Length: 412
Image 1 (cartoon, rainbow, N blue to C red):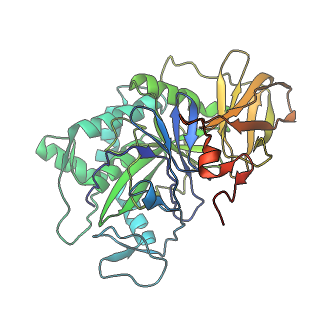
Image 2: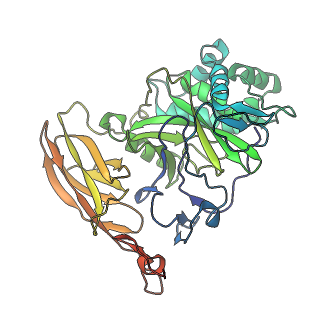
Image 3: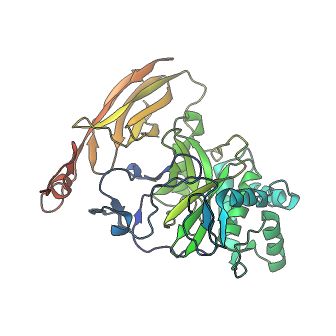
């Protein structure tokens, strides 16, 4: 699968399209919390950090190659040579294959039981010995990205090389490995899986080309023992980046880290394409989250827990998708992304918390509460728009949307 060229346009937060499951929400862990794209006017962020709001009725009007929101089944057909988007059921072109067939082959190529694959993973990860951790993931990513040689597939074929075969080629060529983007993604997935990690490979289609990249499971924002926020902060510090790109499942709050070779580091910007399809790797096994690097402080564990839940609402009483921030007495934060009804639920150690929410263009109240062992406390959070552009008009004035939803402004 030949890669698409990464756009020089500002990134946009996209909706990832999964195969056979609910769509994950692409999220950026930035200096101001998690940002995500949902119902409001499309928000783009430039390289300088300045935000722009655009009026748009469809993706093509505000950024090329933005994935459309859709669901795919494993019986759907995709043209593996042109990168044409999957077509629901039925027969495809002569170059078409079912997504389920591709998924099965990819899983076979992620040959974690092969001795060469396992040995390579151990050698790389052993630089940071101990239980499976985020530092080992980082070392695998850097090793592959720094030593990869790109070579196209045979003409007329979308060829998938097994991880062990790619390593063999690397030895003969005196490099890490050689092949195209899907071969890179397969090897990345296999090396991480071989040391206990959980991965998935994402196929991106559109513009008569395709791309593939890997994501690794970091844990759930609902699980304090996953320490997702600490892992994100460690990545920011290690790579001197103020933004880490992930996908978050709104229901389970599970977080998947972008490991695309087109990014500068683990958690770099997403790759733009018309369609994104998730192929789960070794999904018959329970997902496993990496631990923190040695010496990196984690939130407290082994304590008695309670639950804080609630709903994020606009000042007009409408539910909002936002990031809920819960800060304990020591200043440590836990985060949760609400579902499309604005609801959140977080299990936390008993104690005192300050609770607020974040969403670009909104200001939220801050609430203090105490949580006892076994208690389930409901804390609703209200927010109002704070955007003002140079003309003095609010975005609601310009685009006809506000705390009470989209208005009929400008309509006959």
